Amino acid sequence: MLEQCRPDGIVCANDLIAARVMTSLAAKGIHVPQDIRIVGIDDVKYASLLPVPLTTQHQNCGYIGSMSTMLQRLQIPTLPIRDVLLQTHTVIRKSCGAHSGVHRKS
Image (cartoon, rainbow, N blue to C red):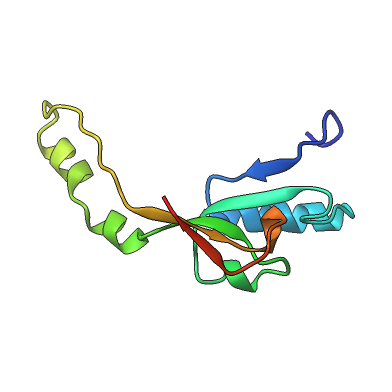
């Protein structure tokens, strides 16, 4: 991808992928956030401990795991479609090029 274009940033599906992308970029001599910015989703415990602390969208993973929506759908496939909204907030750290320690509610 980087041979064809050079994005300003990458939003990863989760923090594990973001950490792997960060490692791969470092191996190619590409610096985060100077050359490219990275953002993850989850706010896993090690996100702040990466070589460049990871900006991420914090979500309460324990709450997600305790929800029974999927199990209900498996038991009763005819249930209507529904949206489940969770409270999240952005944890801004250095990987996005901003100062760390700022939290934004969303």
